[in-house]
Amino acid sequence: MDAFNNSWNIDFPSVIHFVDHKNESAKPWKLLETHPDYEAAKNQEDYSAALRLVHDILKTPENQKQLKEISEKYKGAIIVPIRAVESNGENYIPEIFARYISNCTGLDVDDSILQINKVNRTGKDEWYRFAFRPKFDGNVKEGEKYILVDDIFSNGGSLNELRLFIERNGGKVIQTAVLALGGHGDKIAPEPDILKTLLDKHGINNVSLFLKENNIYGGNYKALTNPEAFALRRARSIDEAGEKVAAAKNAEMRQMGGEGDQKNKKQRTPPVRVANYFCGGIMRSRNNDHAIIADIKSSPEIIDYCKGHVEILDNACIKIKNYLENGEINKNHSNQFQLFQNEYLKLEIMLKKQPFSIYNKGKVEAVSEIINGFDKAIILMEKYEIIQNENHQNKQQLNNGNNNSGRK
Image (cartoon, rainbow, N blue to C red; front, side, top):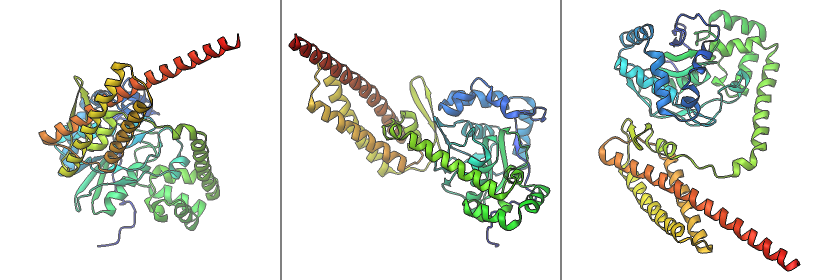
């Protein structure tokens, strides 16, 4: 078996797409972005919005025909969605898209392969995308064939990095599918004439060095996507390309520095988000309950550990509730509140480090306990914080009044 070198197969197929299937629009991604459910599905962790969005697009006769062709042409393939966290939350569109394809084709979905870093590439240019690469982790089934899915095909870097992760670990990626193209056509593997003109313009050594210096594809220009190769070819020189990537990195560092104070503040993770880390599956709200659809990979030890933390959270909830009802605010209660917050953080961190899936009834109940615990925790924490702030303001007003009386 030859060593894996990142290169695309010369006959890798074009990206399957469903919005503007006939390629009649100059900006097909805009048709997707103007859908009324797009923003909520992509950036607000709205499962129902993602489901409506995907159904509206795939329900048409021409797209149902495409799904049938997928089921016939790629029998036995495994579908893997790109599960990425956007700036405001997890993008549910690829996951729902993958499950919709699965329901229509009978192909299995593997949601155990996850993007493990946050790169915030949505809306960014090609140089930012060269600078910040997604990374993936999970269990790849050696010898199996995979279809990768995402919402939009822009530069193809995310799909390509996922392809490389799967193929380095023994799988074989045979197709990619997206809801909409992003303005660079439907070719993801580099076209020979694009690569040739790129290398003629900048030189093989210079292109390879650029990729190595930026830790992209091990320096192998044959692993570039077609839009990435096109972007490099468009640069006046490879030095200019390097400068633009460096500028993107510096701009991101400056922005992170400017947000330092905000970064240092505790940003509480929503209950559904934490439970999603916990389950590694899809979660949705329904009648104030949470349903879980996930593949099964779980640990009884972690379940028991979480149940112990649920009890601690429940006890803390009861104590804080008593403080609220009795109107008691003092140093001891503030300390208790801090312990509660620490317990919350401990559980949150543990869940993020131990993603796994839940399936049978007992384990679903355990996850429900976790979710309900977080729901109660957040409500009580918010109430307690409000009362603390009001109490502090009242004391300040009282002190100011006494000081003014003293001056008279």
